[in-house]
Length: 172
Image 1: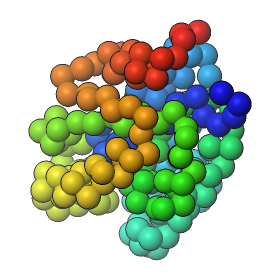
Image 2 (image 1 turned 180 degrees about the vertical axis):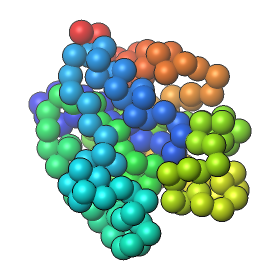
Image 3 (image 1 turned 135 degrees about the vertical axis):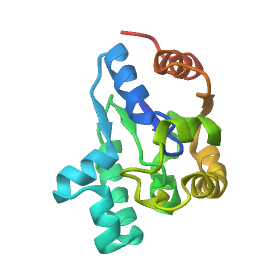
């Protein structure tokens, strides 16, 4: 690989992108970045605050800029927010990169995200809204992904191993 991230993780909220991403980075001996954290540190506000005050569209613009900066780096593991693939420019940035779509079923996701605390897009009826978001985005995840890794019933360590195996990466 000549440039860009070593691994990019996409998928719905609650799938474990940040947890698995940190494990992958540790196993591979490379830095880990989470674009939601990049947006928060760059603005000094939480994702919730940005979406509440400025709207989801503005957040997606900030997220796209964070993804653009992150994919310019070489040799990291990168976790994208659940809706990052909604931005056509972000999808274009991911073309040709080693992207893994971590997928999960709604029941498992609800165990992980609970009642939507800290998740502004799940403010009311989290299960129904999560399902709608997943249906809206799953084709976009699949379009940008080189591999799909189901996470239901798996530990983060198992998922990290499956990503490494699916992308045929060597451990550090």
